[in-house]
Each structure stands twice: as C-alpha cells, then as structure tokens.
Image (cartoon, rainbow, N blue to C red; front, side, top):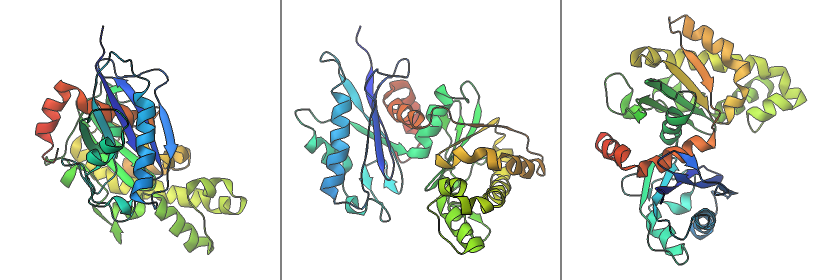
Amino acid sequence: MSRNIAVGIDLGGTHLSSALIDIDNLKIIHNSLTRNSYDHRASADEILNKWTNNIEKTISKSLATEQILGIGVAMPGPFDYKNGISKMQQKMVSLYEKHIPTEINARLDGHDDYAFRFLNDATCFAVGESLLGTAKKIKKVVVLTLGTGFGSAFIENTLPIVERKDVPPEGCLWHLPFKDGIGDNYFSTGWFTKRYNTLSGKQIAGVKELLTQEEAQNYAVEILEEFGSNLGEFIGPWLKKFNAEVLIIGGNISKAVDYFILSLKDSLSTQQVEIQISTSDLMEEAAIIGSAKLFDPSFWQIASKKFPNL
C-alpha cells in the first residue's frame, strides 16, 4: 500500500537535518535521516548546494513507486513563510530576498519541482512535541526553544495559536519587553556570554563552556539560577493567561535545565503558577515531524486558515 510521504526539515543557523516522514503514522522512515552542517556566512551557492545535497540524500531513501507530497521546512525568522522568501540580515545574509523553493528545485537533480511549505522553526518543534512528545494528548501546551535565539509557541489541540487574547502578539515571546530589552536578550546564548563577561571579565562561547570550563564553573550556579528566575518572571503571566497545562523546554540550553529548574519553579510559584515542566525527548525530530505535518491535508486545511501568513 502506498504511503503518504513528505520531507521534513529542521533548519538551523549552522545545520540542516532532513528525513522522510510517513504522515499517516508520523514516523521517520528508516535510514532517511540526513544531517550536515554549513557556514551561514558562506555564499548563497555554497549554502543552497549544501541544503540541496542533504535533501537529495533523504529523497533517495524513498521507494521509486512513492510520490513525495512536498517538502516542509522548520525555518528560523525573519522569513516570509507564505511566499518562501528569506528576510534574514543577521545570518544567512547571502540568501536575503531569495525565493528558496525556486533556488532548491533548480538544484535538485532529475526531479520535478516540489511543493514547499514553511513554518517558524520553534512552531514546528512545538507541533511535533504536541503530536508525539511529552505533551501528546494534552490540550494546552507552551513550548520554549532556548539556544542561539529564543523561540516559543502556544499550542492548543496540536495547533499553534497566533492571534488570540490569551497569547502574545504573533503567538510568540521573543519580541516582548523585559527589563532593559526584550525576551530574546535574556533567554538566548548571548545573555550567558554577556553575564559571564560582566561577572568575570572573561569570555565564553555559551552554556556548554560555562558548565565544563574549570574557571567558568565558579560562576555557573549563580548565572543559571538567575536565568531560571528571570525566565519564570517573564513567562509566568502568559502561562497563567493561556491556562497552560505543560511547559516543554527544548534547544541546547535545555541540557542545563537541572541547574535552573528550581529557580524557575520558585519564580513561577510566587505568581501562583503551578505547571508540569518537561524537557524534550524528541529534540530535532520534533521540528522535522512538525514541518512534514504541513503536508497532512486535514492539518493544513485548518492551519492555513488559522495562520494569516501561510
């Protein structure tokens, strides 16, 4: 029996992971997961050729009798998701204003043009988590991705909520005011590097070094506890307003959750917010599955109406 298959892609600032997804049972097809890295500062040709090579390797794992419905991409912003045009000027600068489906289809060897659908990477991750992760069968879920950037999504019945009174504008948190800046200034890698420099006068690349470098370890507990307290203060009002049942934390910073979970919970408790907090077991697979889900006809029929920019 023929399977309904789509390519799902998790695209980050330094890596691309793609896989064939059986949409009917949301399974990654055996041996189809392909990963590679790239330099976001490279030329457009170099970046696009790396992406295309990765996608071709994944597509090659499909059966000759199977038709691929399309390619779903979990894409960081800023990006014109409806039209597939990059708007990024801080990373992948060489792709600015390029139409990604046209660029990749022109490079794919021997294939007809594929349909592309794009969605914010944190939102795709959240969809995948709500379908298969800890949040499966839970109605109201808030998902955070903590890494180079600060991603977030509000999910109800596996669908992102982007325009409603109980969620922030655009259905995400990164751009909201906090202390002397916005959320992204405080809940991404950059905050850790700046905070460590303020306290020690020295440099680290990120949280991994904070926890593994002997000298940096002297500051790790203080910095991570402060991070957890800030995070709770920032997200607490929105968890309460949305009436969230579970908070899922993903991204590279989630690997340090044991160091900030208590201060996060304490901060939430002072706001009378009691909620289940879990880290992602799926990690990149959540974003891959969430992006491929865009080619599930029943999901797309609802999602395309809910998201004004798809």
